[in-house]
Image 1 (cartoon, rainbow, N blue to C red):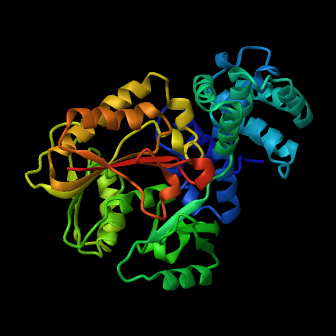
Image 2 (image 1 turned 135 degrees about the horizontal axis):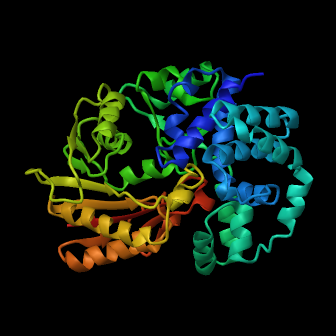
Image 3 (image 1 turned 90 degrees about the horizontal axis):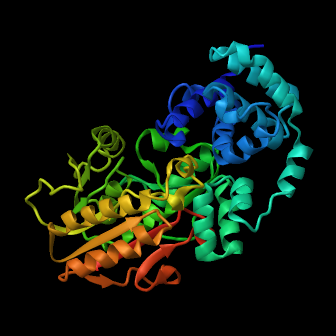
Length: 440
C-alpha cells in the first residue's frame, strides 16, 4: 500500500519546518494540501500540529525504544518515528497496523530504505498504556518533568514556573497543546455583519460572536479559507488579539496612519476599516513577498491602502508625519504557542534580549514620524516582560515628549494593568497580547 497523501504531505511539511523553513499554518494552506479532500486535509493538519506540539515528549519516549541514541538517527528516520508514534499514542481512530506500515513506507519514500526494519520494530513496541505509565513517573513539580510531559523547552518552563508558580505555568503549558479557535472579521466596506453570517451559515459554517466584542467572530466548524467570502477577500482571518490592537488607535476618517510591521496586511486593512474606509494607511514591512500577499488580500476592498518595503529598525524613508502609528513588533511569539507550536523549538533564551533591542529600534524610528498630539501604539504577542513593559519603559525614559495613556476602554477594562493592555491567553482563549498606547 503506498503512502497516503495526507501522511506524505505532513512528513514533507514537518521536514521543512525541522530545517528552519516557514510555518505550518502557511504550508497547510498551500498545495498540495489545499487540493485534498476534507478527510485528508484534516488528517494532514492533525499530524503536523500534533507532532509539533508533542515533539520532545515523543522523542523522550522513543529514546526508550531505540537501541541507539535518537539524535544519531537520520533526520528522515526520526521524523517517520515521530509521525508513527503520534498516531499510535494519540490517535485512537488510526489502526496501529496502518500507522506502522505507513511510517515504514515514508522511510522508504525518503530514500532511507535501510532503516525500514528499525522503524517497523520500534513502532511495534510503542504502546499507549506503556507511554502513559512512563509519563506517570515523570516528576511534574520539576521543570524537567513538566517540560517533557507538556513538550516545551525546559528553559521556558523553568522561566514560567519561577514567574507564575507551578499551577498557572502548568495550565498554560497544557492549553498550548490544544487546537486554537479561528477568529475572523468582515474585510469589506460593503459586507455587514448579518449578511456575512447569513452567507457563511448557508455555506455550512458554524460561527458566533467572540466575547472580546465589536465585530470579532469565531468559527466553530469549517475551513474558512474555502468560503466564498474569503476567496473574494471580503473576510479576513485574524486573531482576536490582533483585532483588539487596532481599536487602541482610536481611528478617525481623517487620520493618516502607518503600520510599521505590516506583514500580510491584516492590521493595516483593519485600520482602514475602523477609519470608516476613509483613513489613509501605509503598511510597511521589510519583506516584499509579505506585502505582495497583503496587496492581493486587501487591495481590492481598501483601495486607500498603500505599501512600502522598508526596514523599520532603520530610519524610515518617509517625509510625511502621521496621526496614528502602530508598531506591532516582531517578537518571541510566546503568546502564540498554541497557534504556532514550531516557535517553541526555534526560540532560545538569549533571543529575548536581542528581540528587545530590535523592538526598541522600531519604536525609536517610528517616534520621529508621530505628529504632535498623535498616538503611537506598541504591541507584541509575547508573554515576556523584557519585550513588553521593559521596552516601553526604556522608550518613555528616552523620549520625554511621549506619555503613557491608559490603553483600555470600558469593554477592555478587565484586561488593563498599570496602564497597559494585557490579554492573557487562559482568560481570553486567544493569543496572549500586550499593548501600550503612548501620546506625543
